[in-house]
Length: 527
Image 1 (cartoon, rainbow, N blue to C red):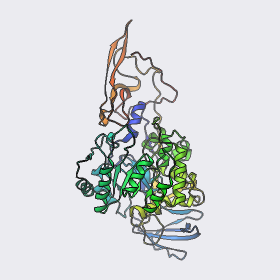
Image 2 (image 1 turned 30 degrees about the vertical axis):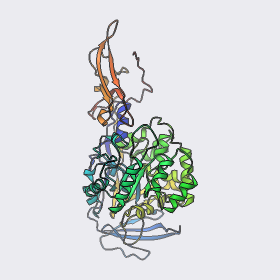
Image 3 (image 1 turned 180 degrees about the vertical axis):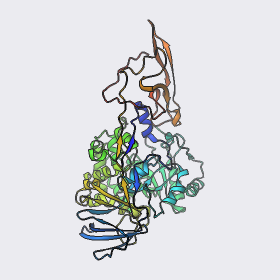
Image 4 (image 1 turned 90 degrees about the vertical axis):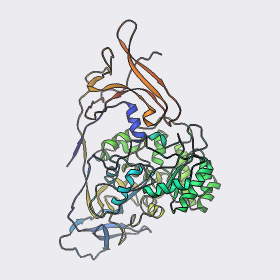
């Protein structure tokens, strides 16, 4: 069965707003992933290829029951009434784990549709954590990936993370960090994430003493501490001060021998997030044009993949990032696959496959890239019972047409997704055609602020995301007759991506317009 969605036309600004971070919600109304065999107790997968950690490939069968892999072998007796899947020619791999996401809207359903059975979230609303913690222990049919999360992140007033409109208890030099960490633990955070970006001037950051205090407080409470960094010097500070892991690879300068030695000595892991660094560096995204992928993408996935970051500046050299990942890998630093979806140019689920391919490009073998998205996150985040196809482990797995241990692109050749021992139905997404714009004019302003096809002009600024910019619009008479749109705006600091101006769109998602016949927008400016 196919799901149908309308295409919503909006301004470029509206798309950027969505990508910066829309408020998380615990449950999506967007369909697209369903579960088959809700009454099935036993599932037997016969004649499937399995690959051991040493690369040995064998043909075997699996008996799944009560969400667990009960038996693996060639002599499995099929229980009466069991569902049997003949997987001849297919390869089984563990359900994938995305180690860096931000989950909201249809995120967890979108992730499962691409074989991501567990999502490790680096910042989301604490209010969703209780429900998601309960769901991840379920062994019944589900339609979404399981979630582990940092919940609220540690940052300062106006620092990175505050721009997304999510309430944050900001820290300062005088804060009681022990109380702050305990509050996160009470909310259900599985680990602590902090933002440490002192070596730049665009936004404020935790100072080193406060960041170190957060790390120490987290460890006293039995929690890991992870750091968002963007420079090698920040990474050195954090590794020196006891951080467990870095959630981005720095790309401002080549990795030094000093950092490599410290990272190895302190058993620090790194989640490179090459997919999002590629987007910042304006790299073409191969996932965006793949025809076999498009039919599985939800509206949110379509929109986030189709956009890209504006030019941010230094510190995001993609080739340098690849080189640094290669050196980290050769030195023995544990690397985990994480997409940082749904940032611009990424999307939940599908971008983890992109990330694995980029890890291979950076020097990992395909088998190592698969382990970076399965076994390694389990050991790092203590994701009990996941990440491997072993008797007694959770029955989360994928059946693939190809062999990703030899060719990483095969990770997308998904034939079956099995979650909690039940087959997940991947439902194709079909976009209905929207009507073309009734006119090429987006607004004359002679009578009102209405544009074509029910769209309207409105003032927009970063105040909605906690910024300080302001905007106001009105119709004004032009010399010689007619009216124009007057925009009064002030763009101010206080938000990572400040903006103020006018936008064309609609709050009603049923208002659609096909603009594919146009390639550019032309307008006159005076002032």
